[in-house]
Length: 240
Image (cartoon, rainbow, N blue to C red; front, side, top):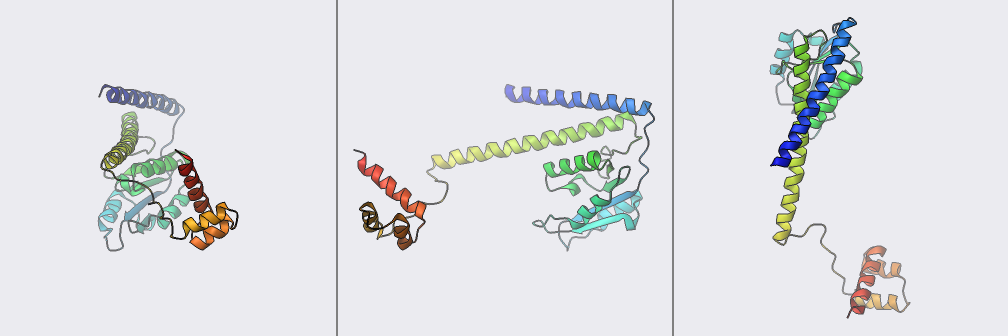
């Protein structure tokens, strides 16, 4: 418990250290006369199936002020996440533009994808993101310093949650494997049974009458499998 708390405190310390550096950079930029986001405003809507209605997200976009011809909609199944509309939209976005989404999960299926897309849009494409359902997540320049600080904190916490979630899943998987092994459960592919003709062919191979490849072919197994069985039998017979 102490170890976990220490890890969390160290992580939070790094979070606020990073935020402090960002605040300082933001102050310097403002002193130089930073500009406001004055580019195009795009909206992105994603629904999980073709039957699901996008009206709720569309209404939120219109209320925010996004024009209909600037809204891109993807209708996808849970298994298909190619998002052709989103990919085309990201290529259009230029520095100074703004991407509006109703909720943070429109960017990806999990925290890793969301954070990666957030980083790509804001850092590489140099565009802003506005999350309608989370007003704190608004990266348009010209916002007050407190707003920028809070957005950074929320994103850092999302990143921390993602990492914690991964570690928890790995821990549960490891514990599940140990518990299963204690119950006698075996993992991996079941070993192949040696065919009835194996002993005869192994003897012929051992005496040099047939090659390992020919013996394997007659048994319907791979060359490597035959050699592995034969070598294992030699070892077991030589062991007192």
